[in-house]
Amino acid sequence: MRLVFILIGPPGSGKGTQADMLCEKFGFVSYSTGAIFRNEMARGTAIGQRITPLMDKGLFVPDDIVMEAVIGRIQKTRRNVILDGFPRTLVQAKLLERFFQLAPGRFLPVAIEIGLPMREVYRRVSGRMSCDKCGKVYHVKFRPPRLTQRCDKCRRPLKFRSDATRAVVKTRIKVYQKETWPIVKFFRQRPIFKFFSVKGAQSIAAVSASIIKIVKKIT
Ligand SMILES: [Zn+2]
Image (cartoon, rainbow, N blue to C red; front, side, top):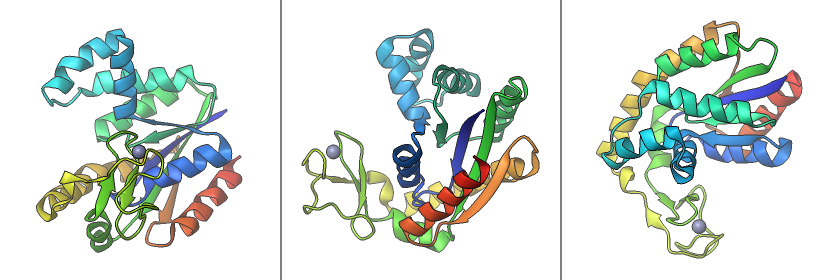
């Protein structure tokens, strides 16, 4: 059975970092909806053609298209999968459950919540920088680049993320709570998903260790 990990956590919880860790240590492949969309568009697939006009206008991609794209990707790979930033809505979570119900014995869905107090989310999200070229995210305090304001990989100047102003952070947290809490509750309750909760307000290494323990427990 293939593992399908769903990492859930507020902005700043280090989901991306932990996903990278799982990929390196256990050979998972990580998919974010953004990356899946870009890939479909670049390849000019049927899904890509439906997404392009929506993305151009900055509109949301409807749940059924998102699902089709994500499920296509889960089915295509032979590796264990991490879903990064998906599902984003309760509807998507329910559709995902339906998909697993229709493919019994093939996948083991595991939801891991990385919890973080909201005060800590503020602290972490303001101060984020990212590289335009490779998308790598840094933080002035928690994850500084080796050279001041330059990407470790590409050496390009880093940009402060424009989404990091206080008002925007506040809105993002509200949206996160409103949309994500029902999803966390759903995963916790539905028997098809194995559910774990990890404390995010500790060092990256400690969070990694907790997640590694979970992987070893279920495999
Ligand atoms: Zn870079």
